[in-house]
Image (cartoon, rainbow, N blue to C red; front, top):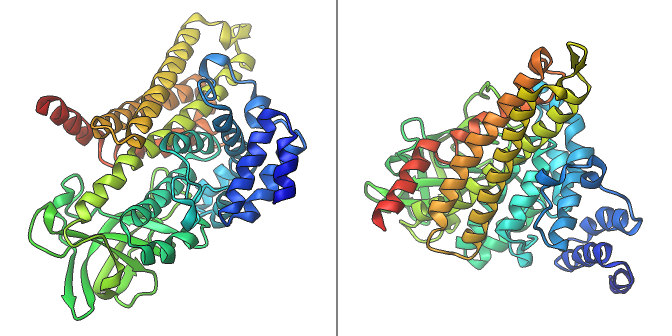
Length: 438
């Protein structure tokens, strides 16, 4: 490592920064991650962002530091090589691409904003949005699951004790194990504080009864971060408990058939006298709702970032399509109406990206406006990016409706982003509450 660091210092600034970044990550116990990305940069390969020749006005690297540009390139390259070629197959065959995600974890993407001492990359919220946007250009559905996984690990890392952090976080950061977030129930969606899943104390254990609905990764993942009722009604009676797969009394419903997000399984998670050690409780009793909402603030900008990546890919693909597709004797790109539509798509994309990055910075700095800004970013970005993908499909004409073309999958995969992590109607409620309280 010392020799590699010395060699990296002799490289030009941009390549040397990536080499040093990878070496630093290796020092935190992630040596396997070092080899592939560092070697590519050391050999001066041009990565995806440069190969694509992105128009400067929508270039997602604008305004980033050199270090941010470098790991953005790593994420773009991974999306191009490891995800995009398989995106359609994962969707059609409903494949949960475990090995691909583990390769992403070798690059540090299994615990992006987790502390390095428990295996994380230790990056900022802004860095995280940059990475998730880039990965989503390869597959929004898979990246969205990775964002949920990262949120679960962050909750344990932030609110767990030292023993819990060192027990659960390292295998999650490496994606040796996968995590699911369990809040929603059949009878409590937007009204999350009314959840009914109970956890009754019995000696040194909790006995859980109830069920969770629409759980991403349910049945295929290893760690379930469960919000359950240990006290009275309302938000203050909720606690957060980690339930491991294989625990007696834990079972799963049928695999749901979905419009999109088909590269990640969705099932009900069922607890029937499920006995879990008290030591698996994260934080204090009654702190669960706070933990859940804290996780969702970051989760909202993460999922908004996934929408950005899909929309960015849709804009680029539309530019390419209308440049080569001819009607009435000339390329569609000559049609002023389509030019105007493309301009609107690009404007919405850049505006949404700026909102997401602003919210990420606010959350990182723990500013008082962070909750409202995260809600604004989620509302605006997921709405606008869905409109972008829908318009992209329209501009592809009949081809856009074929599964041979990626725009239809991007549209299907990000439609649910307007519903999960708090519906966009709930985002409006949060924003209005913030305004009127001030």
